[in-house]
Length: 73
Image 1 (cartoon, one colour):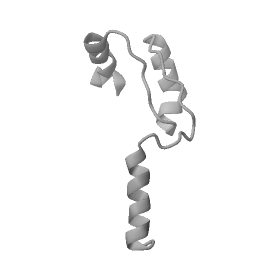
Image 2: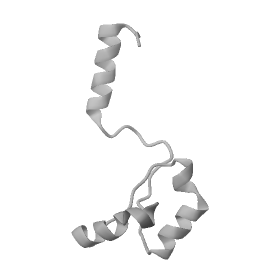
Image 3: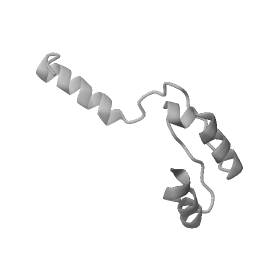
């Protein structure tokens, strides 16, 4: 999929240097993915398995929803 999308090539052309970042889904942790990234000399950003939510607005909206809705879905 990465070969077909050419995302790495396009990012290098536009940005020069970059670090590839992805979450911990099974497809991203798969050995075939790790091997592909290593063969292409792609530097992968270290990212914790359960990163904190770095987007504060999501926390604010979640709190607001709980206050307004009282736990409704």
